[in-house]
Length: 322
Image (cartoon, rainbow, N blue to C red; front, side, top):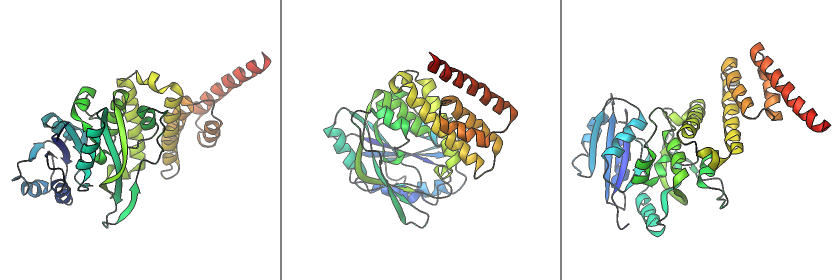
């Protein structure tokens, strides 16, 4: 790998407010061997007019399509890309000038690595830096990339640089997922390739009310869908991860989703559904039983709880008497 071409994937939907700064952050890179592929995903505002002012640069390619979502727009760009490496930058985010250069250097020094990611800064609507988002979990050499990423969605898509062929071989992004298509792809990639976190601040994530990730309930629900999609596509993940890790992850997600339904929304019926899903993952957990007994009061669910409780105590008593 000498100075590889980097394909930068930028989906746009009604991004006229921020798209100019995003493009400028690409043009300001210290590493200049790139192509920027902008996919206008059915915008109804003036995004195209803003983008048009940059199209004189031959490195910028522009594609229009009917609105199909971020994952579909990313896939369109990936299929059209010519680079050896792929980076992702959304319409309202920014790259710091040395992002690509730092990551290219890491790839040159570590030929076995297929994906690198980093820290990023979070910017609020007032253009003030609120906090630095970093990989908070210390690296554990005994733990695989897959386990680390499976237990927490920890990779900011705007920080990633990944080998294109790995993405192609893994099957691109899942277009049915809304906001977690990248996470599901990382899971698939982590089964087959080595990742590396580098503790550098290389990008800026803009947080505002229109971010999909600003809706905690939506993100947790989609994260659960992403995990289930991953497990259905790659059944070999069950062996790589182990049942305990999978059940604990789903147990925690279902519990958290139930909490969001019951407390802010006071939606008892949907809360019951997700608490029961959590219960099925870990029926022996005292935490689950305590929570269910307080919240779930429908006769059907309560009868099912009693059934499981009788079975559990039968097993416990049987073991004690043996």
